[in-house]
Image (tube, rainbow, N blue to C red; front, side, top):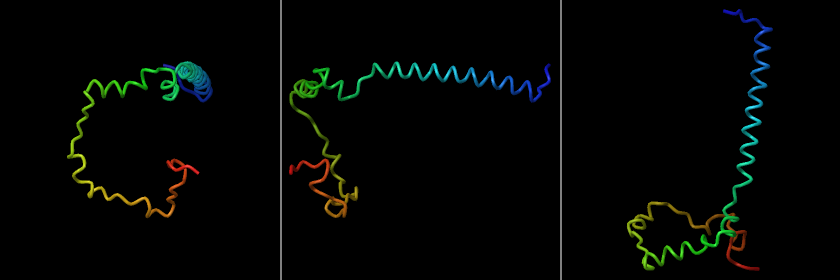
Length: 101
């Protein structure tokens, strides 16, 4: 059994840190390579034209008959929703609005 000294501990730690750094570099490189092949949702939508018709196809397959459970809307008063107009920062012509200037 070897005696641990400050010198041999620091030597071991330097080797350990170097090995750990190599592992991290390899992991980062793999992540970067994997990320290059991934498309954003917008890119997927723009390139795969099946995505823009999938909702329509879903509705057609369901016979244009989508059922909504009214029980989801029975207790809306319990939600304590605030009117947007009561918000002092509310701007109906602000970003994200449907109004045009």
